[in-house]
Length: 94
Image (cartoon, rainbow, N blue to C red; front, side, top):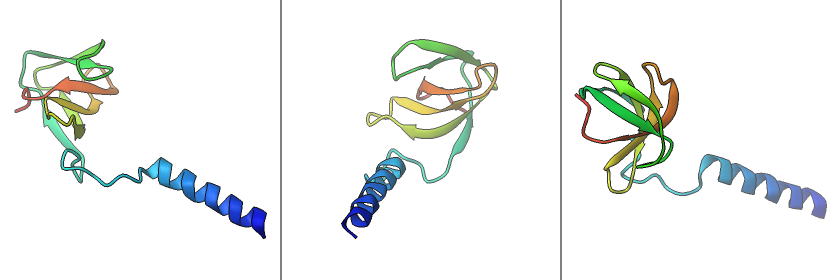
């Protein structure tokens, strides 16, 4: 019985870790919002202000997942020719 309780505790801890036990903050939208890029070009980065992994162009779409605490950076999925998740500078959407 003790080993079953220990296993249940490990499973519970793993589930809480995988789904994020921390409460959602105001910087996390409740649904994904797809925004259109209005800049001539917009770099997609691996981390906020980090290494450039691609470039979005005017009219490309970006699915917003969440914002940085300062709201200067936006994390999500870059479409266009990038097709991967990353960070973009906020303020360049239509």
